[in-house]
Image (cartoon, rainbow over all chains, first blue to last red; front, side, top):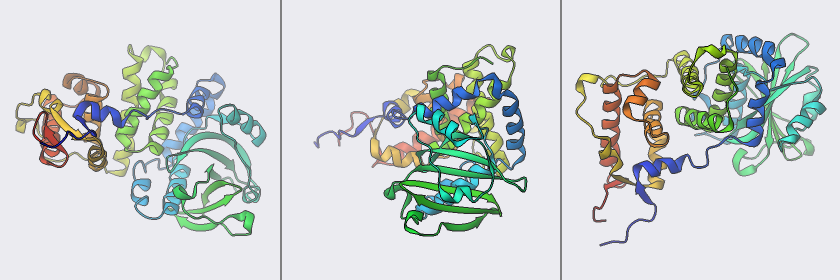
Length: 199
Length: 163
């Protein structure tokens, strides 16, 4: 008789083990708490309406399919998906420093990057999210033409995101048109950025 | 509706992860559902926990319907259900690594019923109530899952079987 497989267990505890480490991070919980603030109620309604008409969709659509390809494909898919979904913001602020203070309190340091300045838009706010299952932040900008831009940022890990152009070394961001959006991906001082706006 | 504590938000996040199959989308789903939940008047539900889980599910389904990708198989008809004792499911022994691989192959409906049964420890009746799914349909789904898991001899053997 062979020795019992130490990695085997009855189905129920084995399934529970799959979810053992599934929990919201500190910054994600903080973001959900921000939604409880009465001051955000009007904004929540507005953004919820926008979300419901913006072709929300897409759940499960992009990333699963894209992650079978190169990581950068999944990054492009994800930023397009988040942009179209227009999820409610957790923190509203037009000043990056204010957002940095809020996110820093939960252990996430928001960064600026030169291509963001070239947007010429006004910051609306931010919310925590994920990028390829890594903690990330979504920033949203209103653009001079009335549209909006979405920027995701997360700590750059080459094994997760693959090799990305580093603008600190004079590389140009990768650009793709996806679902009618112009999307750009780059890396800057150890942070991966992904931007989407109407093409 | 009243704010939910961290435990309930984490419970909803795990449920959303089971539905979506991945965490990127689960956080988005909880976020959007919590906004809707907070907008509702406090008198809407007697049980905020169940109400919120249902809000997560409904938000997920809305989006799936939008994609027209949420479809259960035709054979999930209550009249084809044979008796299933959930003890039979509990008796299965699985290798953790192979289970993780099998989990990735399941559809959202299958992940949902297994999650609620195993992690939340809901009875079939409670799952039927939460998901507004006929009991027979759930039993059929569990029966097919049992066959699928047990049919993979590299995945599962009855408890106590010789290796």
